[in-house]
Length: 328
Image 1 (tube, rainbow, N blue to C red):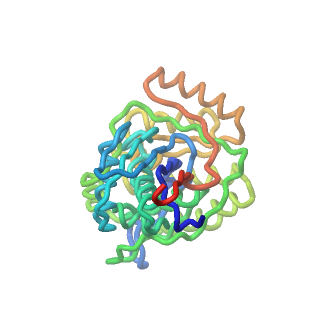
Image 2 (cartoon, one colour):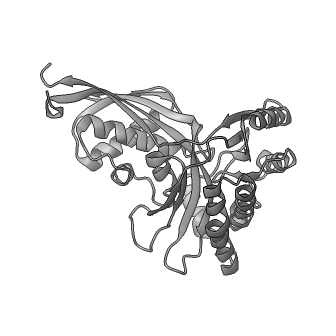
Image 3 (cartoon, rainbow, N blue to C red):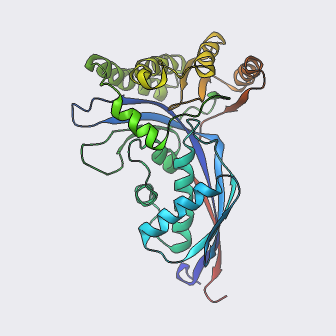
């Protein structure tokens, strides 16, 4: 029996959430815009199953969005068949954790497996319409770890290229807090916000590039959390200022901004807001420190939000297929 004699009868995809650590350049005066840094975290995650079907149906959390992404994928690939999607776990929506991109790519990957279509991350992103601005979610879906991507050229619809992918030391932990707050910008509102943002000062863009190249990446390669966290916190404050017009300051107002201060006071090595928030994160050296900090953050929130502790995902999405013989 060969793979040509088989077809999948069930595909399961599990994809990590992503933390977006910041953009590199909103000016684009040197030929590329955006660019970014981020990392994959295994919790929360997207987990879904797909089985063949004549019609397109879905159930579970975020099933409506899953159906839309599935329609988009099938139309792009000119596939007339359907599938049943069962969403088993979803990432909180519009919280800064990449819920849309991870769900879209998971749906695309499952359907690609069912219909024997290309499943590389760039093909999937194009098919489901993701990665038009940031490619952090695309590359964390594919590879996990810490990601540096190189931004977009004017008039080029290609997914931003991967510049570096580094593993995160396995002992490092991240305390992730999702406060009860207004959701982060997305869709048309996000696009309009980007159109109205003023360009940052060139010296700030250069400072961010220097921090990433000469402190953040070397510190990660060396496993130096103190230096990595210091650089990340500074990058967050500089790039957060570029978005101040849209979010009222370097960090989103309300509990998000307050949580940043508390994480610093609690001793996090590096702090930040993921994407538009309201999710914030604090980096610590090991599990015991993460449990202690998470307990203090929960007390600060008083039940008005979710607090998670997590390592960093060593790999991207996990895919498992159950097969049967054609005609069997």
